[in-house]
Amino acid sequence: MAFINQKKKEVQVKIVYYGPGRGGKTTNLEYIYNKFNHRIKTEIVAIKTHGDRTLFFDFLPFNIGKIKGYDAKIQLYTVPGQVKYNATRSLVLRGVDGIVFVADAMTVRQDKNILSLENLRENLSLYKKSISKIPLVFQYNKMDLAEQGIPLLSYETLQQTLNSQLKVPAFQASALLGTNVVQTMKKIITMTLTSLQKELE
Amino acid sequence: MSYTLGQKQLDSIEDTLNQDLIELGVQCVVLIDMAGNIIADLHSGEMIHDIYALAALAAGNYGAVSAMAKIIGEDEFSLLFHKGQKENIHFSKVSSEFLLITIFGNHVSLGFLRLKVTEAIEKIKKILEI
Ligand SMILES: Nc1nc2c(ncn2[C@@H]2O[C@H](COP(=O)(O)OP(=O)(O)OP(=O)(O)O)[C@@H](O)[C@H]2O)c(=O)[nH]1
Ligand SMILES: [Mg+2]
Image 1: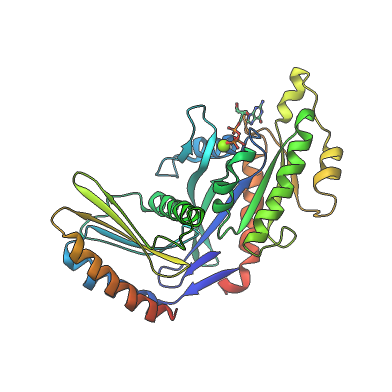
Image 2 (image 1 turned 180 degrees about the vertical axis):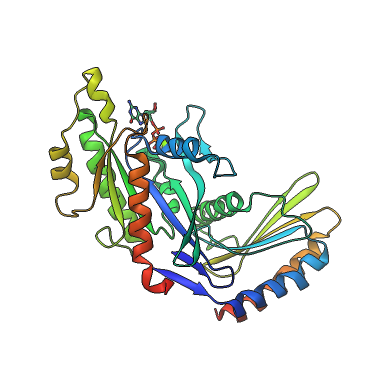
């Protein structure tokens, strides 16, 4: 739940990158950090395993300047995607304001995407939130792998299997190369702040 | 969804934290919500910690410890304390939504700190009307 500080004229917003294990959530945050590190004065906080898998979360605070006279402080988080880490994954969703669902476009990961989206729906309901009401953006990641001849799900298939009912914005991306990473982030920030507009007036 | 706190409430919270804790010799005190947002932060002297990271970690840590409590059949552990060589960190639940983090050196006695934290929490609850 976003916090609006009238004294400092500041709004703090929590955005969570969700999705199956190895889908590229952490890579999104790393790209954003490297691209904007002149603006971000702190390091990424990462609670991870020795093998660089997220264990609890990654955290990156990001100031985007003034929105309607308020200093907007965006807190970017990732969850651990591996199925076995559901206990910590659900904790990260506490107070979430907007979600990027990072799907893995590799054909072999189709079922993992579907299961993870179902898991998101369940975990949101723990906090009495609905996936169809919260600001949400899809990112179909690893599109760069096409060049290496790795079988990928088409945009149409991904839309059909994940987004046919939700009908939210979706981006084809490569977190590794940075394609559409910033666009994805900008979209979710705009949607989330728009959802808060009334409270900011 | 969001919630708002006004200038008056935030001023009162800061006054309380200042009088009860900073004047006791505590180095830093931060009121956060369980989503990891910072409601108020006070420092004796300069701010020397990355309090945004601290808030995110504290909220996650508190959530993890609460989940552990449930597993072993406890309702909650309302208080957490970590002792370092020079600095110590103390977490105390204000309500189901808010957590108070205190960072203090060895010159502050833990007993006295606990007492003051309890007092401050009572006042904050009144201010937040919870
Ligand atoms: N080719 C390619 N590889 C990617 C891309 N994004 C991520 N990867 C690789 O996929 C692997 C997993 O990426 P992470 O960002 O750690 O995945 P994650 O979603 O954070 O995984 P968990 O922490 O386990 O949930 C790493 O080896 C990345 O380099 C991409 O766009 N293209
Ligand atoms: Mg990760």
